[in-house]
Every structure is written in C-alpha cells, then in structure tokens.
Image (cartoon, rainbow, N blue to C red; front, side, top):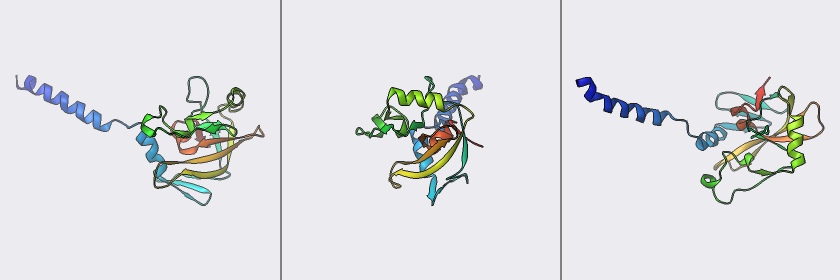
Length: 164
C-alpha cells in the first residue's frame, strides 16, 4: 500500500528530471558558436576539433525533406536579416533564412551529391563575438567552378558536412 501512495510522487519526479535533461533547440545552436574560436584561418572548438582552410570534407545528406540543405547555400543567395528578434524568427539558424532563385536552389540539389568532396576556402566570423554569431565557411566542390557558403558548425551538427 505504501508503494501505491509513493507512485504519484515518483512519476512527478521522473517528469521533472526528464524536463531538466531535455535538449534546448535554439539555445544549443547559439551556444555552439560561443564554444569555438577562430585563430587565424583555423576554427578551434571547445572539444578540440580543428577546422581549417584547405581541409577536405564530405557532403552529407540534406536535412530538409525537399532535398535541400539547411546549412549550405549558393554563393549568390542572400541571407535575410531578422528584424523581429531571435525568438520570433521561425527557423533555427540565420543561414536558413535566405533568398535564392529557383535555378540556384536546383543547382545545389544537382551539384551537392552525398559523398562528394568539398574543400574549405575561407572561414570567417559573422556577427559579434559578444552576441549571437556563427562561422561562415566558403566551400568549393571538386567537380564544379562555383562555391557555396555554410554555417560550418551547424552543418557538422546536422551531418550535412562530414570529416574525411
């Protein structure tokens, strides 16, 4: 009988612990960029991962259901500034809010094939280190003459880019 009386408190305690361990969505992405530092042309994360200019990466699977990438955009796409604040933006990452032509989106679908090799040409900080920011990398593909832009840490997080 004592065990039955304790059951509601045990269930509530499990619920509270589960809520505390839940992974935050937007905040975890924002904190990723704060746990990295750009030193010259090398991005060093808090885990010791080094991402550098000239490094070869492998294109992973696109994260969007329509076959487009969430973290990789064409060189001609324009990232739209968010004027309503981060909480009201409707997407997880700044690079997802962009404008590109239908032709540009189709080119990405056709050229960025899973398993293809991409080379990092440049890494730069976008934003302010004291506030929200991310690291933009310029990628070139072995089979193309165009280049692509990516939020490099976000791309690794969602497996759109993989280390070789």
